[in-house]
Amino acid sequence: MREKRRKRKEVFTLILVSNTDNRSRQFQFSGLKLRVAAVLAAAICLLFGYAFFRLVSGSVREYGLQKQVEEGDRQRVDLEKNIADTEEQVQTLEEENRRLQQQIKVMESAREAAREEAKKEEEIADPTIPRFYPSDGVGVFAIAFSEEHPFLTIVINSGDNVVAAGDGVVRSVGGSEDYLYSVEIEHSSGYLTRYLCNGSATLRVTEETAVQTGDTLFTVGGNNTDLDYQILFEGTPVDPYKVMQLQE
Image 1: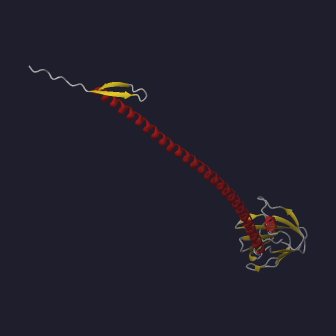
Image 2: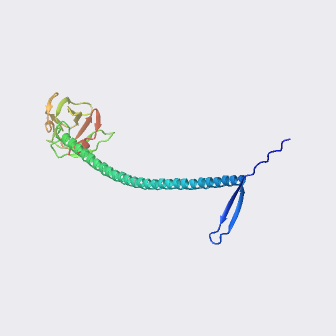
Image 3: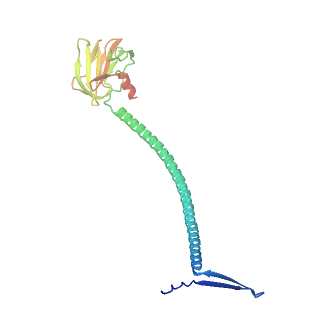
């Protein structure tokens, strides 16, 4: 039988020689131990390298995050400043808008007052509105206008003339069961006036006669004669005194 071949055992020798006393020391390592040591050394190097990489990458990432935080803070400060500036501008615009609204209200009030004044002047200038006192005498207001008494009763005396209160056309002249004398004038402004009395009088106009303000309609023949004066606007009785007052 063949003898079994004996395995060769690899052995490495490390000799350390001192420079001072020339003494030497020997260290022997088997190949297996040396390879294991090399593997361990490589693993340790890799571990330290990985740890260093993680440390560096973490520091870089932390630095980047810190930069992002700083940039975010700067943007937040800029945004807050912009918001404050915008709020100030909005407040300024609101104040300006309030001033403009006040000016508009003042202008509208002035415009409305001007329109009312122009309307009043136009009405005063309109001779067809019966604003004139219906007699050329002094007279006394005896009974005021009311719903039950839709007339203004004036006491006038002999010789006083009952006159047209505004420009218009005489639509009726005559009398009735209630009044001995009556004259009705239609005015183009939408008014109609009636002049009514029970005392003696002399008529001075006829139907369809065009009259102007102050023209005599009839002359009263007795003292303390009641004149019932009525104004209608678009068919509705109105207070004659208010119409006269309106035009003063």
